Image (cartoon, rainbow, N blue to C red; front, side, top):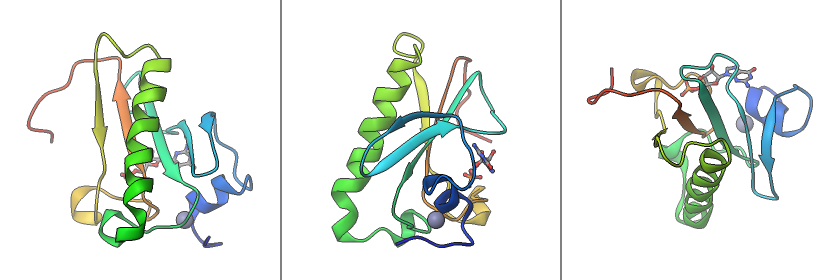
Length: 116
Ligand code: 5GP
Ligand code: ZN
């Protein structure tokens, strides 16, 4: 399941380059092109799922996997002591701009709450 018009499907397919830090059979993680923190990674399923809203019951294990990979890459990037923020934007109103589900991992600076 991939969409030729989808940027992240094209990154998954290797048609658009990205600075990858992790890959397995279900997902890839790469550096955000416009980082909002010293470490800003995106964990992206290989299958095209538009948003969290479109994740079905069959995707439950995949969703858990994306979060566990997020923790793994965050720790590999040295964020274990400082902590990191994990974000999924769902819908344009919440800031989603690429409509292929992805988990943001941000770290290396302090964060405020509530987020902007
Ligand atoms: P969203 O706004 O959908 O939650 O997050 C999309 C993210 O994708 C943004 O943080 C944006 O900087 C990042 N992004 C957009 N285009 C590219 C690209 O071509 N390569 C990479 N590595 N990141 C991208
Ligand atoms: Zn896609």
